[in-house]
Amino acid sequence: SIKETTEFRKQVVEDVLEVYPEKARKNRRQHIAVKDEGCASCAVKSNSKTVPGLMTARGCAYAGAKGVVWGPVKDVVHISHGPVGCGYYSWGNRRNLAEGEIGVDNFVPFLFTSDFQESDIIYGGDKKLETIIQEAVDLFPNANGVSILSECPVGLIGDDIESVSRRMSEKLKLPVIPVRCEGFRGISQSLGHHIANDAIRDHLLGKGPAREVGKYDVGIIGDYNIGGDAWASKKILEEMGLNVVNIWTGDSTLEMLQNGHLVKLNLIHCYRSMNYIARHMEDTYGTPWMEFNFFGPTKIRESILKIAAQFDDYIMEKAQQVLAKYEPQMQKVIETYRPNLDGKSVMLYVGGLRPRHIVGAYEDLGMEVTGTGYEFAHSEDYEKTLPALKEGTLIYDDVTAFELEEFVMKLKPDLVGSGIKEKYVFEKMGLPFRQMHSWDYSGPYHGYEGFPIFARDMDMAINSPTWKSIKAPWAK
Ligand code: ICE
Image (tube, rainbow, N blue to C red; front, side, top):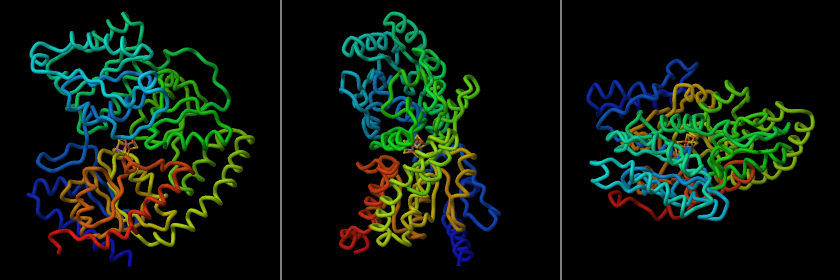
């Protein structure tokens, strides 16, 4: 029964935390919960410092600012400012796709780094920064701007990237944007999102070429086009009769960042990374915003109707046509894959949005989410999550490598959905796994284009015959 399951999972939590010293156990206890009847003890502490010594999967402010928000702006040269590692290891693996001529008007696939050496740390890197901004613009004359993403040492040695940026911006007649996203700031990539939002607000927003706002103009905020997600979302909105003029930031241009407020409505997919700027655009320019979710046909339907309700009868009629056109196709996808997936369970661990946003897509396939958690969500994210979960679901915030492994071994899900740091741990245990950050070289997963791919991938992972011939070496 549900009650027994809930009690069992509560006991699992106690057992797993048992190994920690008392102080660490007390801390971690607050970050883990099992959804119980009436949510008597569902509260999960979040957005707080990781206990030193515990293995976290979190990233840093630089990851949030460069990797997440700024990196997908394609006509801007993004300089990873500092030692080579941060730029190198964040190069190309988020799979945020962008159209355009590589090296001409699309610099997303490139890595630009100031490659700090000892001498730069000792004598300062401002001169070098000036030189490489000039070099980058000489080499790529179509670049519409330059962003400077600080790595830790830049902040530690007190470099003044703001004044270099100001000088070079005047000289080159281009936006040169300093982003003070040193990795040590904050406790996760979440502050990096905020810093990146603030840099857009301070340096670009409202400073673009003026344009008229059409009555069906909308922006997509917080879809980073992972494996083509934003293109799949855009397609639905356009078929509804809406005009997608901005995407922040997936396949984006500098102009889109300047004119994000010039729409009738901003549609937010990733609330966690972009709520700051959405609120700012509303407060300053009166641009309204609302959240939506394009994962799986149930959530897509809800979102399409909610979005259309903000417009007129014409859009509502088109929205109904979109539903009528695609839902039978989605039903076919469900008929194909549901028999293979019905009743299977999945445990998730992702960043700041997906642990709640993808629940509906799994449920469309008959699967059950038995555990989920975020790396860096805030309390409002957990509040939005709880209603989406079944009673008995295990919830873990900033789960440690040890805890997640133990939880998985005890709950025995049919599938784990998490990131690259988790993938091989579970695959070596003989457990089906899908990367739910990068979609494992696949995608898109958003929209009507994405759902058939998502369904196929989950089936492929769970029902691959290879699992039958895999045994962990120690289990043989
Ligand atoms: Fe938002 Mo990985 Fe994107 Fe979310 Fe964010 Fe990150 Fe991507 Fe993950 C992201 S912006 S990079 S939807 S930082 S997959 S919160 S952790 S769940």
